[in-house]
Amino acid sequence: MAIERVKKYFEQFGLENRIQEFNVSSATVELAAQALGCEPKRIAKTLSFKVNGGCILVVAAGDAKIDNPKYKAKFCTKATMLAADEALTLVGHAVGGVCPFGINEGVLVYLDESLKRFETVFPACGSSNSAIELTIAELESLSRYTEWVDVCKGWNDEA
Image (tube, rainbow, N blue to C red; front, side, top):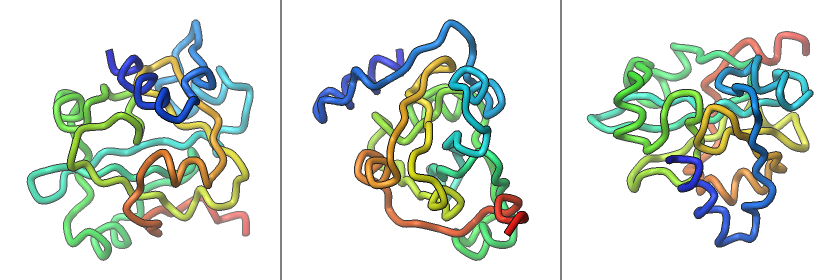
């Protein structure tokens, strides 16, 4: 089970006890926000995409949407999300619990600029009923991210 894989990953940092598991689904931004009692935009959703025969993960704020022209300019390919069976095989987590922790070797993680406006965010932990609250610095360190990217839209419309 992927949540066990994530717990084991967090054990090396002494953070496994910070993982929250719910009696309800947190598989979508809206459900996760309800389970956590926070604003949907503070959910750090992890989106999985096909790139060059493999996959990448983009972690973005709950209110952000992929901006196709920005994505294509950055990754030189169309934004094509992984199918459910591909996510499990390529990333190591099922859709609804995809996160940047305890993932398969070779999967690159990118953090979207939409997250930088928060002190803490809530990414999933490998299952459709889990999350952990992390500071942005913790997210950077624990996700072993490749770089910050600007590939989303819709989150800064209020500015």
